[in-house]
Image (cartoon, rainbow, N blue to C red; front, side, top):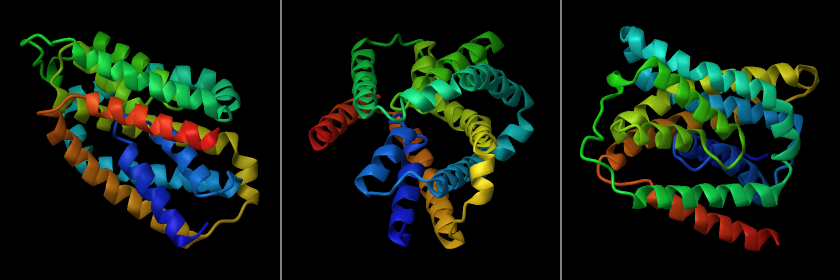
Length: 257
């Protein structure tokens, strides 16, 4: 991997982790388009740049979570079902979905259609609940919705946003909740990946400079995109991301076949 490739993948991770377009999907296909083999060293790199993206979220929300213990508890309640389901399905997801490119494209496009259809239905004026009104039962349900995103192409952020908006949480606050929920979710997923691959990771070698560049680019781009998405959702819908999914899936399908 070159310095330019490490920066590109860091940017892909940072820009897509918090948007409803699936960072896992983009990293898989980014690696394909850049002709980067998915070696053990590459797995380490992906874990590191995910940590960079979470660093951006921590910069924005660590203080808020430390002060708002009720919100922090709801984040943990949402994390529990995601962690349980993700742990159970880890081997199945890795074995089936990560190697089946046609299936990934189909899921990526299908979720885009769901976004477009969802936004066609008018939302009631009362759909302005603050995130503080979220109950613990609802928070648990959000975690179940997020668990669906273990499938590449679904999008963790997209699943959380749809679930929260459907129960009339303000869009911009739904986005912030998805950012904060990403912190334990991605850290937990990274820890599981490291544990499952611990023997291979110990025996592998990697370039510290490439890891640093990917980490920093991911963190900076993630910080910027979170700020942008909050402002965007105050006046726009998820339909734009749905159309992007359809266009990207079509282009990649033509390139693949």
